[in-house]
Image (cartoon, rainbow, N blue to C red; front, side, top):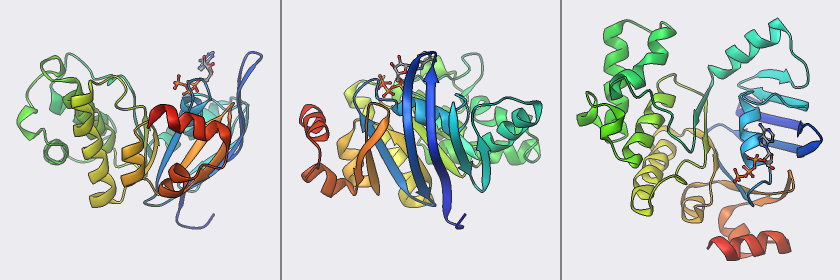
Length: 252
Ligand SMILES: Nc1ncnc2c1ncn2[C@@H]1O[C@H](COP(=O)(O)OP(=O)(O)OP(=O)(O)O)[C@@H](O)[C@H]1O
């Protein structure tokens, strides 16, 4: 694998019972690249993302993250350990923020590195505060999540995912549970991850403004496959398929 490919998805299939949701997806994401995945509800976008860190085990195909390649379609004890290793390289942010309600904001951010023994308590705390600063929440470190807005909670979730220093961040519709006025603050933090940290990101979103401004590439999903992909400005201006065009007309 060439050094700058962080994620390689090959021949990915995923079925739930008789329902084949992902029907042959191949994709590479290079270091520092931001790829937006979009398409109709039910087209398999979230499932592909969830296969990257084996929240869903692929029915067939392989996933490679940071040089570690794992096949789908079987379960062994060894594979469970490999999945655990692979996940150390992947941060994920979900539509629902999934913060621990009984912990402070800072504890939410530091609990994974603390469990993994990533440094001394002081180092972990310092790094947690730096991450909260990065997402604009340094003053909220002692609060509990319930006291924060949805946008602030999602920014804590981003800081928490960054705390394990992943090689790639996966975002599954990170703003779709938010009111429009809170969406901007989350997208703006995501943009800084790309501009300041050159973070590699795969983002399922219908925020075409974000795609146009931040993404290097966009992939349109249709019935479990990539129907077309390209540079955002070109794909949005001149989609090659009727389905892409109809979808863009609906969301723009
Ligand atoms: N764990 C599961 N068990 C059974 N069916 C599932 C499961 N997860 C997803 N599906 C089904 O797979 C299909 C694709 O779902 P997926 O969430 O990947 O689509 P999506 O394109 O991300 O759509 P949305 O934007 O609505 O999230 C849907 O029909 C969904 O109901």
